[in-house]
Image (cartoon, rainbow, N blue to C red; front, top):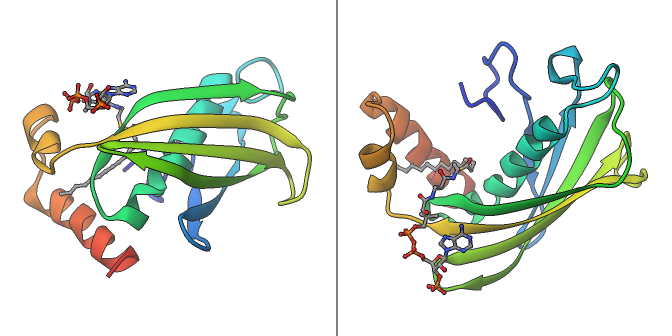
Amino acid sequence: MCVGCGPDHPTGLHVTVTAGEGLTVSGSFTVTDDHQGAPGLAHGGILSLAFDEVLGSLIWLIGEPAVTGHLETSYRRPVPVGTTLYIGAAIDRVDGRKIYMSASGRENAVDGPVSVTASAVFVVVPATHFVEHGRAVAPSELSEAAAKVAEVNP
Ligand SMILES: CCCCCCCCCCCCCC(=O)SCCNC(=O)CCNC(=O)[C@H](O)C(C)(C)COP(=O)(O)OP(=O)(O)OC[C@H]1O[C@@H](n2cnc3c(N)ncnc32)[C@H](O)[C@@H]1OP(=O)(O)O
């Protein structure tokens, strides 16, 4: 039920992500009427969410839980409803618990015009972070997340 990537979320972004070479991932997000802000255009906050999701996927390559500490988004072109954004993201460097990342999203093709760029600092947290700070979750929700780490980066 993740609003970014959960396939069963009724109005979520349904972002899909594939691991690439090295510490990179490629994602895609199709803007639907559920994601509109101004008439016919994607809402900027929704686009920011799509980037948070793709950037957040990079942590599965490292295999340590981390949360977004800082996320900066630059909107370079309007994104019409119906667009598929192809988002490439990479880990640029790691400094202690801080993971510096960047991403860019291109309109309707992997080599399409750049619509949005973003940079982020994720901060590594202990797995207990989610238990201590989140609502009570079923153990299966946490074990599914932990299994995903093992699946992506055995
Ligand atoms: C079981 C496994 C489950 C796994 C599930 C995984 C799911 C993942 C899903 C992902 C979903 C998608 C993603 C989401 O939506 S994640 C949801 C949105 N994000 C949050 O909720 C985060 C809320 N904030 C916090 O929890 C704390 O403030 C954190 C943990 C971030 C830091 O508090 P903590 O007390 O722990 O850290 P520290 O103060 O000792 O600082 C440590 C270092 O970090 C540096 N720093 C700190 N803050 C920032 C900042 N804002 N920008 C830049 N840097 C920052 C700081 O300078 C220091 O650096 P240095 O001095 O050492 O050089």
